[in-house]
Image 1: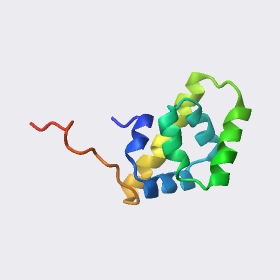
Image 2: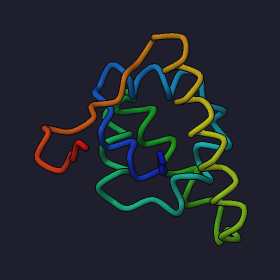
Image 3: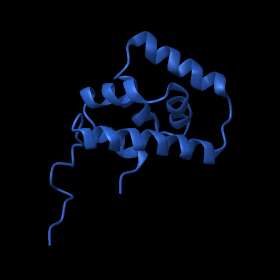
Length: 102
């Protein structure tokens, strides 16, 4: 099951694709509930000015209901799944240490 925090496993080119396709408002709301590590990973896919603007938008947004954040995160996950289906991006499934086979 893919969760929003799993976006950390996507490479820089994939992040750029996601940010290009994702709705800016949805992304802003989704990042309100993200870890700082995930925020920084995703902001690397933007220009310095774009990242600064997104952070300003997040700050200006104020408090957001958790259900709204989760809904926005699901919207972003849908974008990721669509890009995977199209073959535009692929998730780094890990180094194999945590994978189990039967």
